[in-house]
Image (cartoon, rainbow, N blue to C red; front, side, top):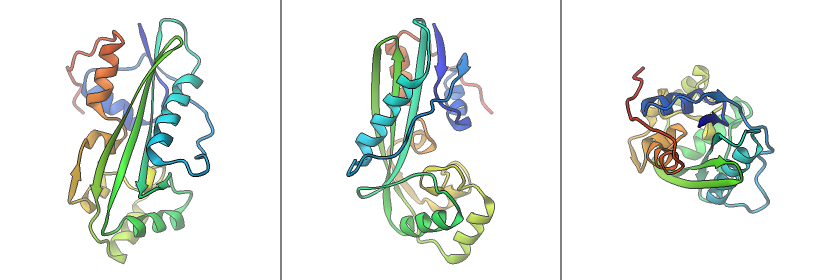
Length: 194
């Protein structure tokens, strides 16, 4: 059985490597990620993960793994900021409060699809103007849901999380490993430490 990762995210590849899983091929899905009108964050993450898994061309013996991570403040979905101005708005919104990170994970084999959603609560410290400016200059916010990366400099802004750390990075490993094992894919848990 071949494993196809339907994501171009290097973070997801690194996380999979931690549990000894190396995809046979990377085939990022190309779908419209626009939320539906009044779509809530959790159903949105679940829908995108499944749509991505279904959009990837795969043979009958190829297992497709896809995921989508959403940062949510209340009902509001914070995607990947388009520019530094939007990243600033996101950081100001997150500053001094809690938010949720939700990842939808989908696994497809032929016409059968399994999916899970994982939610983690993240607490941000109150950010100073200097911290926001420095973070924007770092460029780390680019291409990151919510405009930050917990595994990088952004981790210094987060005094507490409630839930899965790997979910906040972009792929909840416990649930992903369980999906893979359930589908008959061998997970050896012999990580590939970086």
